[in-house]
Image (cartoon, rainbow, N blue to C red; front, side, top):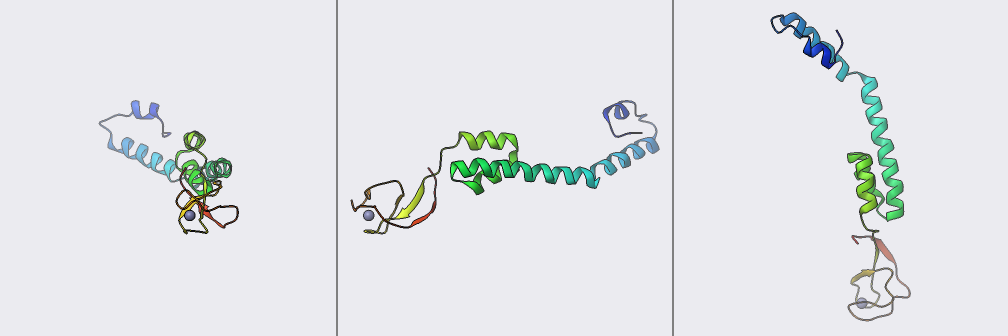
Length: 122
Ligand SMILES: [Zn+2]
């Protein structure tokens, strides 16, 4: 008896031994190490593709997690999200500004030089 829908529909409800055999067959199928190996490999592959998308979107960790959690749907979510802007501290007032800005939005200081402090949201 294989663990599939035809076995379930043909199951004799008055025979507990047959139901028990089917349950054990399905339990063995779910705990098969090959199934789990494929699930882990597929999850890692989806996370890797998500990380590649995240490299373009400047959010590698975010998109790798989305890819691992949702697979191809996570890739689509990643592709629909905006590119993350890098942030840095203003040399004048020390507040956080976008690294692409030429002048600080708070104090007006020129931002020609300054250290990037990491990726932030949009
Ligand atoms: Zn400033």
